[in-house]
Length: 167
Image 1: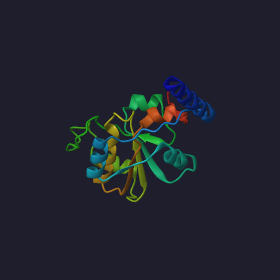
Image 2 (image 1 turned 120 degrees about the horizontal axis):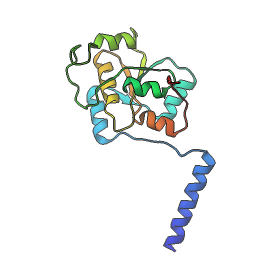
Image 3 (image 1 turned 180 degrees about the horizontal axis):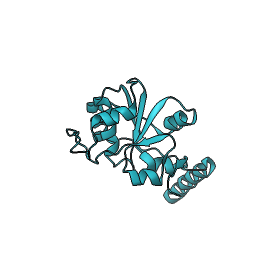
Image 4 (image 1 turned 90 degrees about the vertical axis):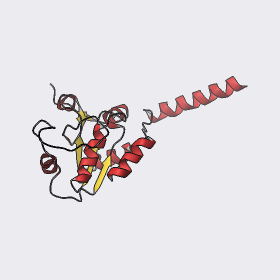
């Protein structure tokens, strides 16, 4: 009887996945990530909401916080690249510690409108680059900052469109 129930449950899940065309991708922030976000003053955005904003071309800035070679191999449409370190602590930022780039460079990339929605992402939920990008946007005075926690990995797993700059 128990085996039959398990088989029925598995069969039901397979039907749901098959009918939907692709499995749902839902990466939720961990308790630590929620705490970091609260302390830094930013929120999270889920894949369906981000996809809607991109497809309707809502006014936002989309930042890919991964290394430039990874960005060139594939990124979410409409995103621009700005590399952040892969660490959870928000350390003092100087041109010397970031290869000649200072916070004003990031601020120029984000633009003058401190009220614009800023969405950041990195490789996946384990990457801390997204946290760095969101925390620094908040520190620079931007007010509506969201981190797409699942990153490019969830975006691609959901079958959403990406762009490559590599021929």
